[in-house]
Length: 158
Image (tube, rainbow, N blue to C red; front, side):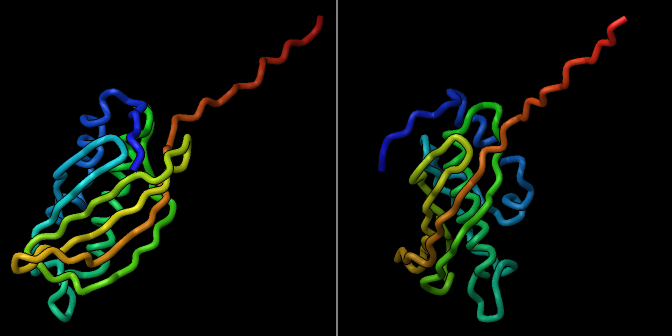
């Protein structure tokens, strides 16, 4: 992966603040393990409250972790004034989500002024083994403040 230069020198604090502002991540028990420009690694412990009928962590929960890892990775490269929003993703489920802990690793593939493309992997740690359980590709949008040009005031000729 290419080394990226963040546009915001305070990218770490900004990414952590953005992540901490998401109640859904707190509910799921997801935390940040590692941040670098264009990269993020998150983790989540197993919880029976997050499982489906067969006892595996629900695919929607795994997808949420992958999506957020992509979002945090992309956000590390955005300007200070940006906010972020996912506009598209595709998840491929490769194995049942069984484990004591789940790790979501994402990296930016192609940063852009408005759209950033990322790839992510979900790994399950189970009985001393690490298994790749899902992958994601995602596109995230930098939401930048809009400058609205006001029309020139009309003057009337006397």
